[in-house]
Length: 501
Ligand code: BG6
Image 1 (tube, rainbow, N blue to C red):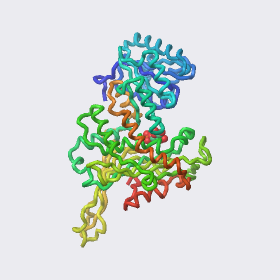
Image 2 (image 1 turned 90 degrees about the horizontal axis):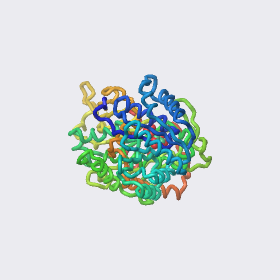
Image 3 (image 1 turned 45 degrees about the vertical axis):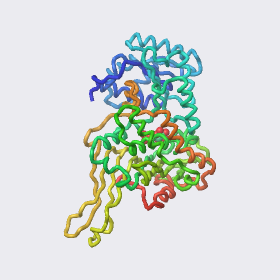
């Protein structure tokens, strides 16, 4: 797509934590893709800020190497030169005033050089413990007030580790910024298929009339990963699967699937409807946690013929760790549309496949017509929204098997993004960065949404903390999680859809 007519505002992007993984793997490649498609204006600059001392020249040469590695072989050298001219670095201690006064000086120089009207967006790719401190230091320099240009702040996840810490962080940021300046990022909303849920549901007339408790039996949402905790054992062991994935990524998928049609694509119109779903999710009592929440931890196992070690043997994980690497919940959305329709959600590491999808399972058709045929059971209809690895949508239904007898086979009608739209070169961050530069907060979390999400999972976290798991590890690497996860659905006469077919 050519973005020349939709270029972002002239601005400077300031990345705190600029020497980290996120900057090199996602942020720079995303900026490169935006520039390639002409979404970035000429009046644009980047300032990396990190604790490491380094010259701008060193930072640029790192950036060149990283772009070559993460953008791939077709990287356009003239575009890299364009970036290099605009990329600067300043280093120092995040608690020191000097770091920030030097940053301010540099920003003024860049405003002049590139004709930027003091529009700044600060990207906090730092550990969350620094979110408050860095924002406070920026505020002390008078760089948060929107007297001249605009000032926006993106915060990476995790946003708090429970309700209390999320509330405290929201309160701290709101004492320094207006809510309209705060962009809480959730990279799931950068995924095309996730954004497509709204277009699919509300841009077509045939799905919405049946998208409710009269036709839908239940919804399943799975985000399964083959990867283990890699080098992130230290962080992961203090978080666990529930905190890491459910109140953020999985709740995005739940709210987009369940929400009412918003009155416009304006940020608050969309987020109001998402927020209503979060408020309608029935709170768990401690008793519910025992029956509607399942946790698991992977043991040794095999994935694609390769042996995988147990979670407790991963680097930086204590050998007696009680942290869950799998979590499943049965959610009830207590509103008119969804009363009586359970939403089962699950996520886990070291599962049998990398497989993220939303399955909308419809109710069975009445059987009586087929009583005297060879058909024993009707195929149930389902719509599957595939999020990764293959992005697309599948409609599953029954069809007559050709021949003299009435017999039925299950068939699929498939839409695959790749076939229709070709390969999209995207990191998933392009849209989110662009939206921040144009002031569109639709795909970012509002304070109330973050707090409601933590509120829903809090009772589960509390019960799990109070009663340590007795049978960890309880699923082998390379499986579909613990038996209790299957039992959660079996208790309702249902089954997880485990394979892509
Ligand atoms: C991150 C989690 O937010 O999302 C990781 O911290 C997880 O543990 C990742 O692996 C999954 O993202 P994706 O885009 O690979 O599904």
